[in-house]
Image (cartoon, rainbow, N blue to C red):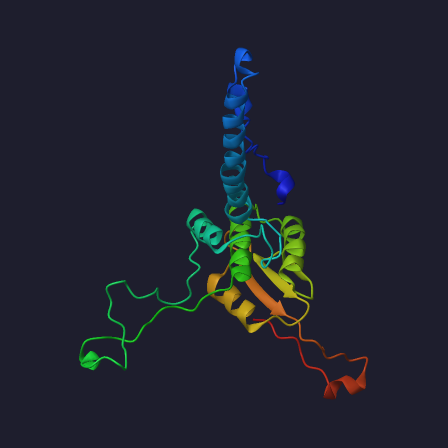
Length: 229
């Protein structure tokens, strides 16, 4: 799931190929073609390079604050392709809707409060889209899932390990070996996006930072039991 698996596209346009052999020594014509070549390199080539990195390449790992990174527009395009909504809660008010304003007389009887949903940061959108993509193409085998999860959550910045375990009874567990953010927990609960075979029940278990251990008596005052959700 990296750049090496995507066919490379040649965006370059060599306008000198239109020159006939008898016109190769024409200075004026060659000057015109050279100027057009510069235009194509700056506008045509750059446009498609930006499209590739900002929209087409879902697995672009360029830091989001750097040039050439994935874009919000790219996330919107992929959300349509993969059939997953990136809007939490109700959608934004229609353009013709009159939003409640304190500075407008009579607005109390004619307008409503805005009910636009919560926004998701671009990094979380990319996480959801990548999980959704894998969810659609995977056969659900545990080794395949674990091989996918490791680099994904390393990219995401999670400081623990994520892995799946097959309980061999039509259930499986996902283990997070360190606490996860409330935002990530909400995304997992809301989207049910973690890959699994069809018909298999899934439990997510987040390991607390200090688990109880019976070989250490002092741990009864410092640790806690593992809770599965």
